Length: 424
Image (cartoon, rainbow, N blue to C red; front, side, top):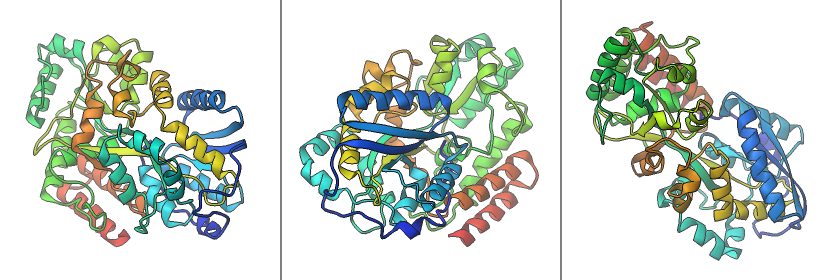
C-alpha cells in the first residue's frame, strides 16, 4: 500500500484544462467523482465514510471508485491512463509516494484561496494535527511554487505487533520501552529454541515495512533528505542488510519470497512478531487476537526511526465540481469524519491528535496502539521523488539480493545505489 508511484506519461496533456486560483467556478451540489486505492476490505470502510458524508451533505452525491491495485505504482498508472483518456475525477486520494509527481504534472488545483476563505475551519484542523504533517505536505507535495495542493489526511508509521503468548511460552520479557537489535535477536533465538516459532518474517517487496525501518533505526535511508542522492550503500545500510540477512541465515525468519501467511502463523503461535502500520489491527481483530497482541516500537541500533506516509487529498484542476470537492475536503477535516473513520476500521492513524488519542482509535485494538501516533515524533517521510517507481524497483532488487545471499551484501547495495544515482 505504500509502494512508490509511477510516472504519469500522458497526464501533462491536461495541464491547461480548466481550473483557477479564485476558489470559484462551480456550485457545491451534484455528483462528485472520487478515486481511491483500496482492496475489498478498505473499500467497505471508505464507502461507509462516503455514505456518512452524503448524510451530512445530501446536496452532494459522491460517486467513488476504489481501485484494488497491488501498490501505488499500479494505482498511479491506472489513474493516469484514465485521465489521459478523458475520464477525469474531481478528487483523487494520493499517498506520499505520488504527491510530488501529481503536483509536478500540473494536474491539481491550488487550494490557497479555498483555505483563505475557510481559514477558521482549516486553522482549527491544523491546530489538532502534528505540525510536521503540514510542513511535510508543503515540502514534498508541491513544485516549490509556494502553493498548497493537498489537505493531509491519515498517516501510517511502522511498529511491531508482538504475540504475547509466544513470548510468554519462551520465557522472554516483552520490551518495556526502547529495545535494541541485539535484544530483538536474543529474543528470537530463545523463542526459536523453546517454541519453534519464527521471530519475524523479513522480506524485500514492501520497502515501507521490509527495508526502511531497519535503515532508519540505524541512522540512514535509501536517499538523502533532499531526495537527490542515493545513500543505499552507506556503511549503516550495509550493516542493516547484514543484520536482516543473519535473521534468515539463522532460521529466525522464514525464507523471504515464499508463501508464508503471517496472520495465520501469528494466530497459531508459530510467529512472534510482524511489522506494519495501523492496517494489521484489522487482521488482529479478525483473528480474535486483540488481547494477545502488544504493539511496540521497532528495535533500534543507532536510534529510534520509522518511515511515515500519509494521504493527500487534492482537487483536480480539470474538475467542474471544485466547490463540491472543497466541501468534501472540509468535511474530511472535521472531528466527526475523523472519529467515524477511526471507529469503523480505517487503516490509517487519524491526523487529528485528539482522535488518535481517543477511544474511537484505541478501542478494540492491541495494547500499545498509541505508539503509532507517538512514532510520528521520530518519523521520516518515505523517499518519494518523481522517479519513485523505478527507484523502488532498484531498492527492492538490491535488498533482495543482499538478504537472500544472491550477491554479497555490500556489492548488492552498491549496485542498487548506482542505479539510484542514474535515475536521480
